[in-house]
Image (cartoon, rainbow, N blue to C red; front, side, top):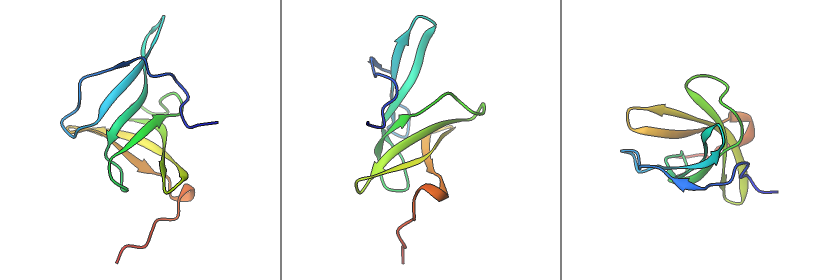
Length: 96
């Protein structure tokens, strides 16, 4: 089973940081499905929304890096969404 939980029906307007939101069209209104070119510590990636928002400011999410699924959350600021990995889901590559 892949990381994508919701189907991606339509793209939204790109954010200033380059991330493009994709929505699924439900009867209750659009729901975020994924972000293309979302900033992550690993470079721009497709980040999949994996559940309902757990706070007002973040969405549970996941992306792939070097063949592994990395869990985390998407937070928003004035530039748009950014993916933050959970420490327990990934051993960060040691950077110099």
